[in-house]
Image (cartoon, rainbow, N blue to C red; front, side):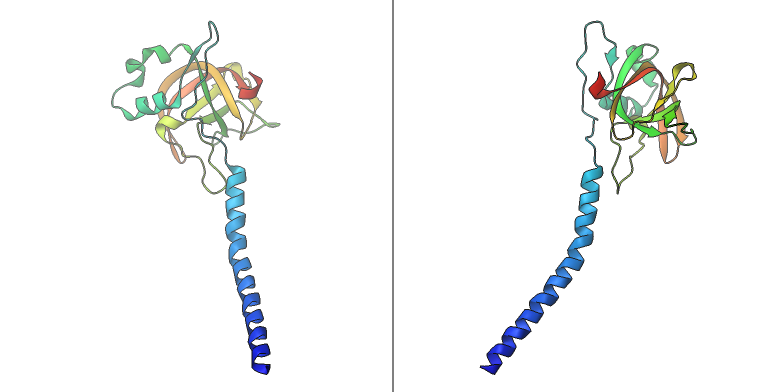
Length: 180
């Protein structure tokens, strides 16, 4: 009988030890998973905007990515996208070296995927646009919100940490997608 009681106590101690080890192991994994999940935003790489009557042309990220990866001048290949007003959908990121004044910026980067807590956004040449606001204006930096930027696009490759920008847009307006 005493043996049986000792075995029960030993098993109870083993289960308690197992529970403590499982809790200590699971907490960091659960915290990291939760932090990544809560900081994720939908990728708008494949998203499109339906045009309104007489509205400006929408440019999708797939088209820009293809133009940046193919040899030759993108402005020559797709003259319909450059020098004319277009709309692009994406997320705002602070431009390196561009100051934020009272929560507003006059220049920012537009990307299709803002990244998450663990992975910063990838600044591949076809997946980032340098946005400057027309007339030295500024807009609130809306990090984590999908925006529609309207303006005139141009091509001029330049290095930006940690990637490259091929496309530039002189913006006439920046609006949240849900305010449209």
